[in-house]
Length: 485
Image (cartoon, rainbow, N blue to C red; front, side, top):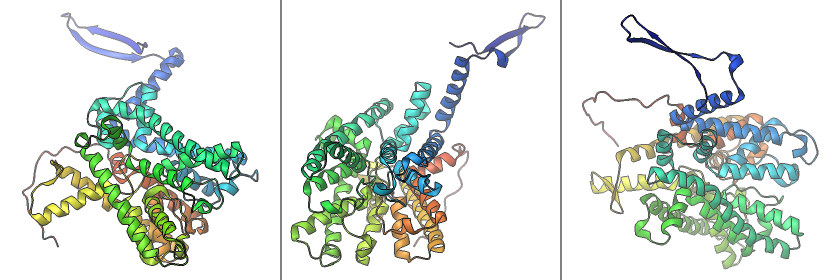
């Protein structure tokens, strides 16, 4: 135990202890170890009192660190300092695993710059609450009870002990899946004529980018040259879909595997809704674009089906594209907007309001239509508090998007469909683009950067971080129902 101060006890006439005070040591007696202990205790108290706020600060500092690194001359191919707004946008896009860019990843950034981006993708893919929890573990060597409770709720772990298990498997699972994807992709790049170092680099880049739903690509023309190459497209789709499920779901699949009855309610809802959105998105996207000559209208039936499935997965957060977004029909863009807004699973590398939020709201509507007082699914009742959280997530997300769209319309003067598409892509950390990001002035770039940060942080995490404390309700007003509808 480190020595923290001098303890003096004053005794009164009757021998009773009257006062006890603690005097801290003067500055000249503070050792480096005492300073470290003091800083550690401060961070520990802050992490236990407000983990969400710590997560916000850590995430912002990580983005700032990557921004400064990308601003170095060595990060650019021309050896010059990259403009701050471009470096900030790229760093935010990487750490928030989005994929939107204002400059070409393949042409503007050097190998060092691309490596920095790849590291940012991996760090951001761990998730904001996971990152904050890991920092707390590294600094204080432990998680406080309140920190575990909040992490448990955010990650949907069943017991307090599972939080530590989840934190340990996040990195190992990520690395293992990304390694398998890289091993699957590297031989194909070798067959296509790339050298061994190039094949390994491109395989590693695409594996990390796909699993973390980032959408960054080391090629100037993206994955378009591989639009008929299933050897490359299939691993990208599998990696993106697995990453969008979320670490709590992956932990359930790793522990109980195919025993569906032992799955948590969160895992059941996430997997079921994800497959429903995958199938529905592929069918609708293919139907809307089937005869469009600018996208898939002139392709064979097999290629059309491949493009439809690929697009359905990409629009939910991954962000790779095989067709020009500006060439899609208006109904297809509207469908893409909706899928982007929903996103993937909670505590995953995907963005959006999350599929469980959509599931809870749908179940609430069904229960209301049936006249049921409880919202029930799979033999479980969903608490009222969960539905309030779902409503809050949807409303705050829609508010963020509406404000950003209004600002970008005033800044850019572009059409509503392009602005809405780009804003939703940033908020949902998807990365699909109509090219508007590269056309915006610095003020517009900052707006989209803020949207990526808000989308990745999550509206509920942001609200928790801004709240000083949870208010205790000491009384309850009489109930009165307003007229709804």
